[in-house]
Length: 165
Image (cartoon, rainbow, N blue to C red; front, top):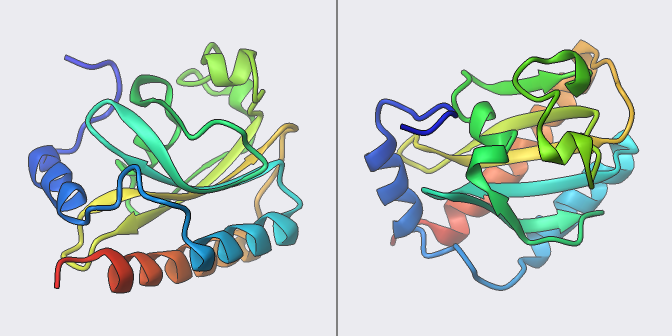
């Protein structure tokens, strides 16, 4: 049993993600424009569109990060998709789930995280629109609203561009 959250409908979620035929595809200019705008808006170290497979998180769009994937077992986003709408971590060193995570103790040295869940048209949680910071950070209601607005824009592109037709 993995030591990270798995959704009760994990098999259906993974099937929906597979049916999108999106994993390991080329970058998407629309998604890249959204992540770049959000990174600048929040002045974050990185902004990502992370899709959660069975054993990894793969980045469909990434700003400020050189890697294209990480193992799911160390992914912040795998925790985010288990939430209702979003996950906010103001200080990863103060959070028991993440304080010893290699993404916190080593590169990219994540100290704060904000992720909004991305869904398929059928409502399955396939990933997140997320921001990474290298310093602790508080998030206002306006910040959370802006995060969800950027996430909704990315979700719309995913649904319109990668759903089964």
